[in-house]
Length: 438
Image (cartoon, rainbow, N blue to C red; front, side):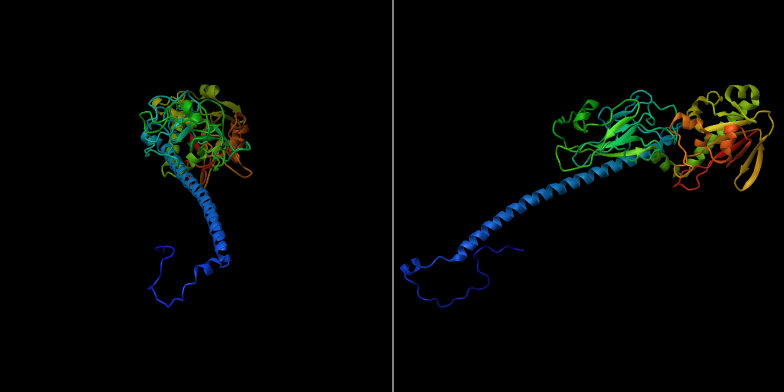
């Protein structure tokens, strides 16, 4: 709409007879028009309201700009998180002969790529830039134009790899709210295995150097962390690491980092949705069972003496290392990732004393069995905990039903499926697997 200029005439001009002009003296003696003062007051009031409205509009615009930047940051974090999970559940395809669940080391050279070598010692956390090139992403930036930072636990990083990685591996990062309370993480121990950070705009005291021949501003050193992340940010090292997180506000002096995190259950819940996941785990069990059967066939009594404990009618134990089982070196890491979850039992007298009950199938008599506990039961009265050494030493942390008594006190009765299977991809596959050995 076109504005109309003050004082302009609208429509065609109309001429009318005008009364004779008054003498100047009459005009001078005219009384003041009170409407003129009211108009002035109204004009001043209008200016005041417009000025206040401008200030309010400026604050609203600032809030809207902040909200937009916040939303862009959240989107970048979600993209990074999804890419990390995708990397973990496809690791064996990009690294033939290795398992699943590994996450990349952080970018240590500000190039967008994970380093060729190791990132710290085995079992220690590493912190750096998000390796967006390694993840097959464009250069991700948050809503304020800053590149993302990333911390990965030693229990899942790909170099050097942990001694074992499976769905019961520990996390390393404890996420805390401003009151020091733990934030929820999808993991049995409540610890995250990876955290991605949006640093947001610089706060007072944060000095962010300009680009040094790289696409991301600043250096590659973690010494720059304090200039990007809030106090309480992650550090490299061993043991449990606390990370303080704060809600986003418009206060320029308040902590302003945004974060997205991954728990171990996030990785294996996604992996379980792969159609070939059950076959991958079952192949590991088959290879373990064949190797164990070969050891028992070669020298049953001596082998059980070295690797089993006598419990009632049975000799039981946890699967030994793949090297002890005589498995080829290239295949050992896959077996060792899972061996703590694999138990065995053999009849002490060498007979077929073990009865195995199958779901909807005929039972079997066995001289020995390999038992695999499956995923833990996460809730309810039968909830299983596998976070401490004492918990892991109890067969009830791994098995259910009569299998617990069999492994605890040597009752030679087991029950379970012959093969590992995923009945419902959205739920943990907790069913015990019992393989009969000759």
